[in-house]
Length: 252
Length: 345
Image (cartoon, rainbow over all chains, first blue to last red; front, side, top):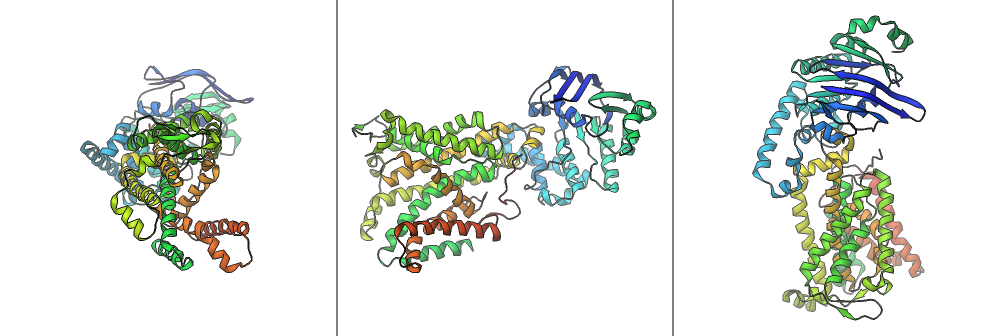
């Protein structure tokens, strides 16, 4: 579904990402772990179009999306979230959701100027869908609050909700549990599990090893930009290289 | 409070001017209308989309120059009348479109820049525009400017305005420009009200909040920013035309960066992101600018003209500072939504 070939990126003298070949299978929940600075977020930036790689290719459903614009990659069904939550602070929660649910045609200056009835119908459909998702995420009671009034965990939920409103095929989650209290983390995990059960391919960067081992079908370990282990959680957990490079470092 | 402040500042005009307060009032209301219109355009850029545009004067300039060059006018040293055969309103439409296209032209390379970087590029581009216009003497009249163009607009002046002006000893030509600029404000606000409450307006606000998130959600942020840039530039172009007609002659010195900063001050006073804010901001601003001389004369009896002129900027600065402390979202800004802050990343 998603294939990466010889992907490399350097920042000055530092090798940020150096990956020969990885492919992600449809409907699998994959986690990418690794010590800080291992290149996890850079890897996300590369495949989602936010950073241009030095070399290598990225294929989404056999289509070459290397160096495509982020918006075009998102339109092809691969949507990402950010390590530092990026909600639209000075817009309401429902506006956040509806902006994401609306497409370029619906957003167009011409349609907005003419106030076409098709746009109104679209908006109603989007609003319905937004409320459905917000209910699932338990943030529907905050619909008319400004996003910046939400707690950190609720912002994570909003960002997640915003990402799934267009039914993506692949979801790239960058630390969905970071800075979230354990109870809410549990909730977010079960939501991620549910999304995966619904058939969305999920690739997740996460530091919470417990959580990763619990829900992932596959775990990839990065260190200094390269893959040092790849397989099911049990296998990765026992890999001596992983223990040395990551778990053994004792700070996670 | 805003209405009170505005009414109070207008009342001030009557207190301070025993002779001909109406004439002074309508003079400053004309300026307030024109600058308010420009500030509404700037608010599309900054308040709605978060674009730090410091080249607003150039958009006003493009609108003014293109329109005036299309109607009968005299440019340059020789002062011969040139006529392309176009009447005022089609020329105005072309002028507005030209300003919007200038926005597109400037935006194509520059709009990718964020925050303060865009500010630097726009202020530089505005200066390049002004110097270019000054040096292209054969077309634009250079430092000699453009004159004898007012008739194209004044032939449409309605009868009632002439009789009204005569009765109160007002300048009917200026009244006509002022009236048109306030009508334009009204129409532009109706248009913007429609647009800001639409999915398009929502998308622009999303760009203002976080461009990366917009891109990650499948929207072309660059194109949205360009559209906003063009719309605001077009509104500025319209204001620029009225500014030229209000002066009766067009000089390159009109479009110095100071013009841009006046418009910024007005927008901040009125409330960043508020649709009607710039109107009130503009009236209060112009009362301060035009009346501080007299006010200061009452306080500092021995001050000379130059010293008095300085006082007005001290007052404007003081007002903006007080505003930032007590009402950081401006007079009409929504506190929850529209604090004046700039994200540079």
